[in-house]
Length: 293
Image (cartoon, rainbow, N blue to C red; front, side, top):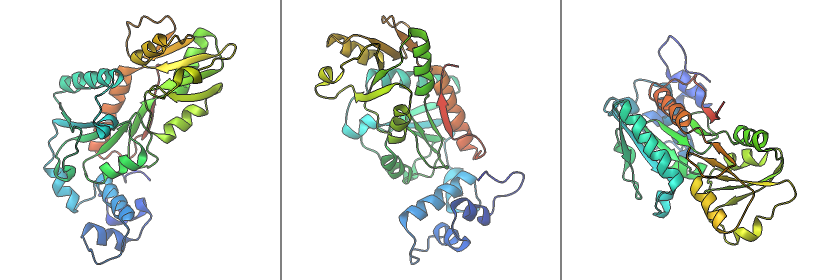
């Protein structure tokens, strides 16, 4: 359902968007704890009211105090208190540059999520999270929440990710192979992994940190290993693994067989989605795969 155009959003619109009764929406927005409404339904109603910009509601007051000059960011690596990988740092640095050019600041939420129920930002970007964790975090805030490097199967949320089917098709045309093994940083989004697995010629997906990776990466005739990230390609090269095709943010990559990841286009698409989410533009596309062409 799209946001109703040229008219004020009503409680009927919120109920229709969620597929629940008007009474249920009223109970949730007015905080009637005595009513037996599941946490999932409550979350869905609150996010829908926020997304459709329904007023008056308790969310409207929180939105009025938002700071439009800040965008918050959280990455999956923070959950395990890990340092961000080179691949993530390049993305984050470029995101910071593009936000700064627009007069916006970047707030890193860090390894321990603070109480984000009172966080006032233009949006919160969650990077490479599985759907369960994404929803757990999103439920704590009614600022717009977006996913990057993951797919969230929910019409409320925008998600931006590399269009691997198109990128691998580009690599196949450029370097003349059909079958491939896929190696990436740990990818937490099952829908995104499922999309990769449907690519013609796909023979397996491996995380770069898997044990015994060298033994697993056995190439058949005419096959290649498509690896995401310059840092990861170097790791495979150090293991003596050949036949690499690198998808990289680094335009100065020393690898001969490489395809550039659309970093600037990806971040521009993400920032467009931030604008749409903040403006409650529900008619805009929420599934945003990004390719070079």
